[in-house]
Image 1 (cartoon, rainbow, N blue to C red):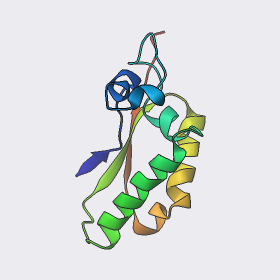
Image 2: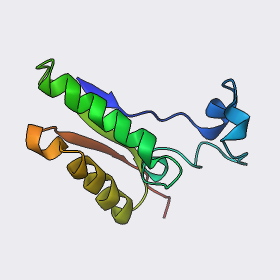
Image 3: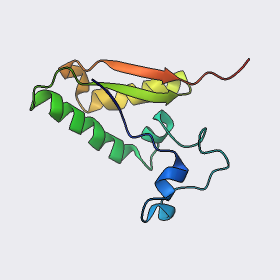
Image 4: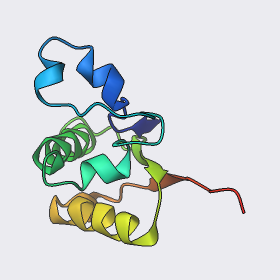
Length: 108
């Protein structure tokens, strides 16, 4: 099973109760603050670390070793490096989580 970490667009988060307090208004939320750029940001990293810990718990305590994670909307190699750093900080490398990514390709 491949789990895609939370990846709502900012307008979708804004529609949740209280969301307007935390989410920016963006002209194009489809390309905005979402995916890996959100996970590695100062404003969201703590929440993302909780998601990583939840996956780690599923694999370690529940022994569901068929659960893997996806990095959605990767825009740049440095973003992927920071994403992987957070996963490793949280100990996901020790339990052998496979990682899949979705690259954003800009037209030439």
